[in-house]
Image 1: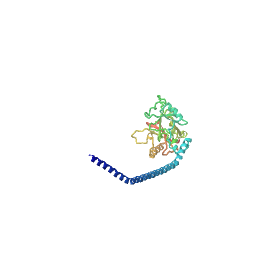
Image 2: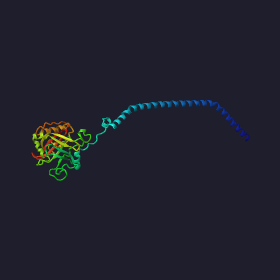
Image 3: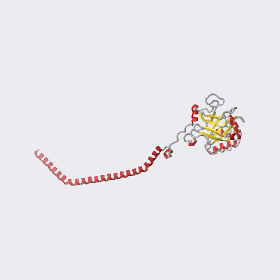
Image 4: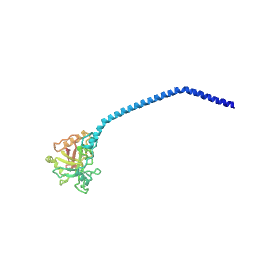
Length: 305
């Protein structure tokens, strides 16, 4: 056992001596290789850092140049808007128009009765009345006064299908809604000449010449019309294939406009000297007449203001 222990110890010392020799022989080349790799990695890192730094500097310079080109415009727009709101700028033009406000008079009348849709007047006549519109019941004011009480006189009524409009023509109705091509107003033919009882006088061209202007104000603007046709008609049966003025409200095409205009001019009792073209608006006053059953006297005016 002693002999074996000595041999084992001797073998370990011999292995360690051989390992030291080999390690000593390999140490310089390994160290050099490691050093070379370290130097290479350091150089590459410095190169990449330098490249990235240069790229960042270039990007920063480009960004700065771009901001210098853009910033003055942005700053000037903001400054001009803040200092002078009335100045015309692209930014100001992009702001949508606000909703139109009611005129002072119509705001007061509408405040008393919200069924008020406008006001109709003709200088030199008794016609100077509020216009009512009740879409859910067109005949509500047929025998009611402005306060909703019973009255044989009734009120001037805007046809349910007539769109009076909520904006202003001065702003191309961008501040509201555009009116229909034709607004039809109905009123009683009272024997004492009130309401639409005086429209019968328009059979006389001389009378028309001195009362040719009609004023109709919506809730938002004052409008003016000039008479272009006066004619007799009637309420026809649904099956009758004839021109029915009371069915025309909107001209979606020039053909539809021309069909209405051609008919009212051909039916007119006389030439008023007022012409119209596609794009014009009309105001039609309709009252009972007694030349036939369900007869009507009709006055059509073209908007001029």
